[in-house]
Image (cartoon, rainbow, N blue to C red; front, side, top):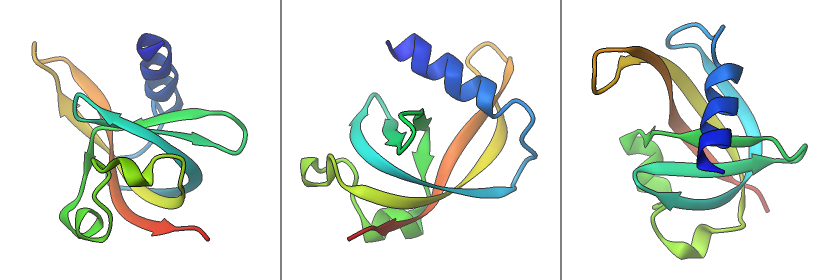
Length: 100
């Protein structure tokens, strides 16, 4: 399942420009191995590799109390290098707003 989510997310960002911010509304489903997992209202899955400090100060997504909460997520896509020097796109959360 993780492989499917990873593949879907990577493919969805293939044409994204570096440092361009985007926004989605999605439900938080958990944090595992440094990744943050969300699903939007159309059942599309997203994962983020990191959270910037300003967003971390607002919400600590490592806490279970935020699971199943809906957020407006602002994120950026960066080009980064993997363990073996291969380039890939990484999605980083820039801002979070809890939806009521």
